[in-house]
Image 1 (tube, helix red, strand yellow):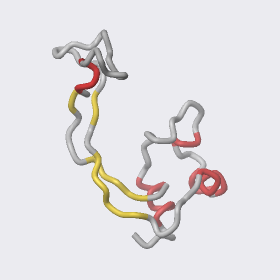
Image 2 (cartoon, one colour):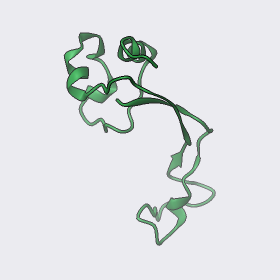
Image 3 (cartoon, rainbow, N blue to C red):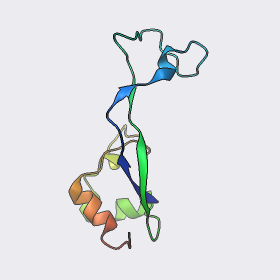
Image 4 (cartoon, one colour):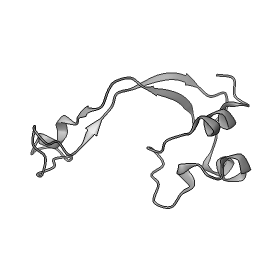
Length: 93
């Protein structure tokens, strides 16, 4: 974890799913029934020090974080308010 971001838009269909030349083309998707949605993200602040996956694993307050669950992707896991507080408590935001 290097910083804080916020969701800056409502979800909307990912336009790359309709582009047959795109690496993200999804043949099942139609304009009426999109398969993939996305949101825009906005920068809020940088953490004073990075919080590594090793740090998260070592913190008993963070044991239930989605990032530590099997099958999670590092880049797209939700963070509960409790876990956000635990991570940011020692940071100057």
